Length: 223
Image 1 (tube, rainbow, N blue to C red):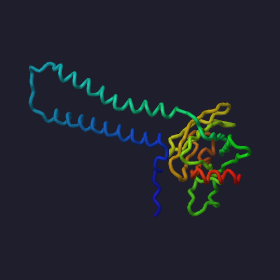
Image 2 (cartoon, helix red, strand yellow):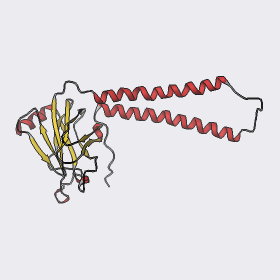
Image 3 (cartoon, one colour):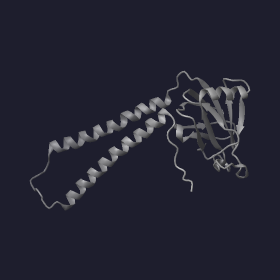
Image 4 (cartoon, rainbow, N blue to C red):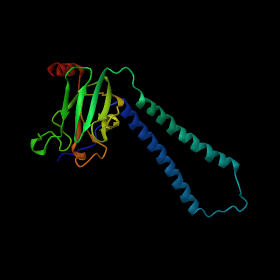
């Protein structure tokens, strides 16, 4: 029996997001456990002090502690947001164009390298391919290279989404959206259109095959 799990992070930004998620979850779990403990002790506590009306020291503590907890969450979040928007010195630019209902890709830095990418029909699937996720022409990208993605569409709004790379960009007709990706290791990555773009919305997958630079150059020469 084959068990399919979520793919591991394959970009520095996605690794930072995974770490930030784990860090935030630990803070939230500690807060939840502390609040539950205090609620249970208050419910079971039979001691009552009729003369206790206020305690400034306790109020200062439960005002300052949440402030520090929010800082531990907000500062890493702001850092990741700025890293996600940074586009500096790309080594390669690729344009992805959304259609109803398939993707086409243009390697803007090279001449005459463009192709359409359709979902592989069920009857043509090979043994190691996934239904509704594999395509007839995979997008080939090099590893350890800064790649600028330009996203647009020709008809309706689509969304070019690869969860493993932490990229989700709207493909809007007449508009170019851009983002930077850096792939750490060779692998095959899967994604899908994340915008409800019509009746065949669920049948326009995205498949990226990441390969080392020397094999990427060979692939370029063969095109």
